[in-house]
Amino acid sequence: MSSKKKTCIVLGVTGGIAAYKACELLRLLQKRGMDVYVVMTKHACQFVAPLTFETLSGHPVAVDTFERPATWEVEHIALAKRADLFLIAPATANIIGKMACGIADDMLSTTVMATKAPVMIAPAMNTGMWENPATQQNIATLVSRGVHVVTPATGHLACGDSGAGKLEDVSVIAERAIAILEKKKDMLGLRVMVTAGPTREALDPVRYISNRSSGKMGYAIARAAMERGAEVTLLTGPVAIQPPQGVRVIPFMTTQDLLERALENVSGQDIIIQSAAPADYRAKEIAPQKIKKQGGTDMIIELAENPDVAATLGKNKRADQTFVGFAAETNDVLAHAKGKLEKKNLDMIVANDVTAPGAGFDVNTNIVTLITKEDMLSLPLMSKDDVADQILSGVLKLRK
Ligand code: PMT
Image (cartoon, rainbow, N blue to C red; front, side, top):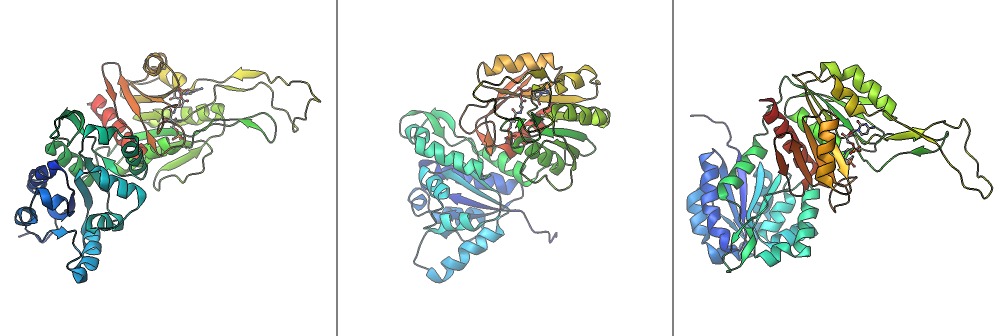
């Protein structure tokens, strides 16, 4: 018999009608070889008896009770440490609100706060509660902290309403959980070049034209590709974040620099993902000294057009290479993105409306649509880490 420790999922069950579906979820996870420990809130026990989960899991169920204070304190830390993944399904608006605000006042909320494992929640509630701005803001907060959210399905709800808020199919939740645990090394042997961050186009020795790109999107892609086994080259503009360990980092400052670094490296790459935000224009002349005030008159700076890096690379793309670009748009997002897919000879373009809350520049989340010549996939708000994984999975699908 193998003595290898099984992967452990701590399953938090909160008080909603969908609590009974957590029994089936537990069984599915066990079938995939997971050892499942259950934590229930007091309200969850109104829907399903702890004995059911105890019998199914083969472990004592931790319930929100202060009747056994001696074990309570120890138990929540032990469970938090045991978890390889912490999954809360169904997750009510209440637990989501507590997690977002850092409230730890019962067994489940203290345990999830103590864990260092990845956390995933599968919300289920009435449509009005799900759509309430408070819930949506709490979800956005959790996503920005790296919590994986399985967006609820739309359908007929137990309360009689129809709309969003139904617990996603338990088989989908189980698959998402397993995918997080078994982050596949499905990019072994592939060389990936990622561009990230802004450019700076000098006006004089102290001033420059730039934009709000933080590099977070590109760095998330570089990290995800490396974790999936790829050999990663990261071309980065000036940003304030640390590159992931293990990737080859090549800095650039201007769009011309980026073009040169990209051209030097492009032939050795299988996949190129261009999330950088290069300036389209630079000053025609860079003043050698700090520009002085014009004594009350307006100043005109003449700009020259920069090269289009993606379009230049696209011209010499080989059949075995896959090129991905981004489209940062503020209006007619999909139409503009499709135009760029074509014009820059890309295989995929990742369209983001940079005016949407939680999307685009400098935030930890994004809302994107992946567009290829044949297909279009609109994704909900998710962390840039999750967006990165979705892009990479899309790229691998294209290369099959
Ligand atoms: O860095 P973050 O703060 O995380 O923000 C992420 C992001 C908003 C920068 C990112 O999601 C994004 O949208 N990146 C693309 C920014 C951009 O320049 O978009 P664009 O629509 O102007 O350009 C289209 C494509 O052409 C991009 O792949 C871009 O890298 C490329 N391009 C643009 C101009 C240029 N002169 N040369 C190029 O190669």
